[in-house]
Length: 268
Length: 119
Image (cartoon, rainbow over all chains, first blue to last red):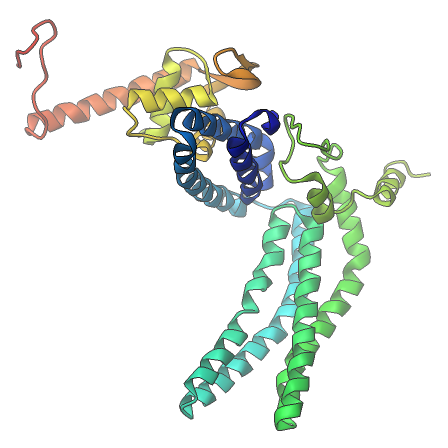
């Protein structure tokens, strides 16, 4: 299937839709992604030939709505599936450093909410709302590593966990600096949870690194048949993620990793 | 197994006449329902996945559709079991329609061969 042969608007929409296919769990994407994309492209082509650009744009909301709805349904199935041993161990490991990295930001959020409550009580409504927002926003990225992990994007999950830790740490350092400049010792208490979060997440990552490598090798060996072909020519079983992004997010694609895997497979 | 979802039942109906690929199924469902039911690509292949797992349809190979382009497409066909299930669902729906007619929720049917006359 080559989008280059389509009319430009159809090819563009098909390419965008192909990116949205990332919303599906990996297994469904690998099994049916090509067919879903093919049917969507057929439909776009027909609409464009019959009604021009307006008809083509009309296909988009239904197609995207359908994708979101079915992706959610597929994810519900995936989350209900029992995990394999390696996945369970990896999830427990990832969960552990998410817990370490997460409990301290939670404490920070609690402090922020308490501060907001105090501001609101004193009648400083705008300031209070800002503190509430600042406290709640970091909760969102806490979920990201788990979602990535469940998608099979192992390195992505690890990077996301690391980034969460680093961001909290930096935020803590910056806010402590600001607070110390403004009201002296108060900033230290606000900064403490964030700084601890950074340190604990980083230390957990360092400790887990060797074990993670082992898990990555096990996961790579299980059911991976090599990197997808480069370019935009797709064949059965491709994952529909841009190959470069896929290799970055999944990890274990580097020549070094391949050597390690071969060494594991053929022990001397 | 029964009742089937509308999407699944329409997919089985579209395959009753012979094997089709995904887009062919989608077009057939659109035509047979006058566009009332529009299957999205995701819904279509989720349903196909369920039907394959339940043994109601099977894959019938990959080949190009000369009416569309040279892309290879996967064809699907109804199994014997799938046909039985579709028939059972059709009979269930028929009974429902009969019950609705008996309660005068639907107009009475036209008798075959007597155009314009109602029973």
